[in-house]
Length: 361
Image 1 (tube, rainbow, N blue to C red):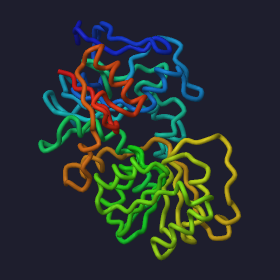
Image 2 (image 1 turned 90 degrees about the vertical axis):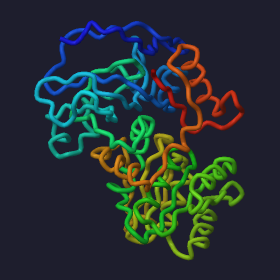
Image 3 (image 1 turned 120 degrees about the horizontal axis):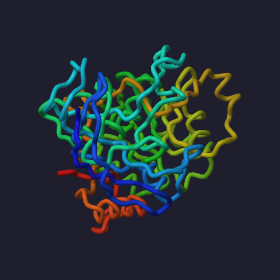
Image 4 (image 1 turned 60 degrees about the vertical axis):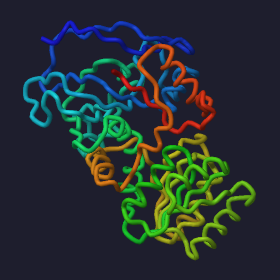
């Protein structure tokens, strides 16, 4: 038996209606499950979207749901058959639990499982709480030199790792162009560097975001595309800066013009990865891509990335802590403030937010 254990969780009931509630942990751990005491949980743009809009695509909040999906914590108890972690271990939690039985799961593409249960994707409860039960196979032990905040950052970092490692297959010496200087774009640039890319360029129309990238990643080149005109001019500017085409381009903006530029500025036989979620339909230079065999690859969440994330952080190839710009305590007032700061893109201190982190004592 586990519990009853007193447990508070941040529950989203409907648009603009969210607060801490008592949700005691009761019952038993199933075989293969762990009870995790959550210690750090990041706030994602999707969390804010559910609070302010109540839905993302086909997923809508119809019943009260615990929010949060970027978390790390400490193992409090383990069920039968768990041998990869033990009580007291600090772990990062991969938030998506696939069915394991469908054709996509059997082929290894579990991130595309139609029945995946993903933290804080309706109707599945998230992990912004004192405790959460989670399958041990999706709990990854953190080395002693990693903080719990770094463990929580493995979730957003996973998108960048999946794009660079699995989809774009970035290798030493590559020239990589990233579109979008938000948190995911910044981490994608960091990962590309960590994987040995010789040149990494980040493009955006926001000079303040590019300044932040420059401060976090001094070796990354930046290009403000606001005054360049259309996608053709942007592509030419990129090729001029690189003195060649890019080996691969990764769009984290979702902007149609960025994807157009990415196709036009990527080398024949190269790869364009689509990470950003833009409009459902786009006008793209498909013939340009076809006759030059530029592969266009979609990126949806991630799979098998957490070990790589932990390795990159632990071995100091990627430094995610500077991305945590604002920290909050586990109180109703502070959590609501964190969501508001994320929504506005600015904290109470006047600084721009990148990642807001809730620390749970």
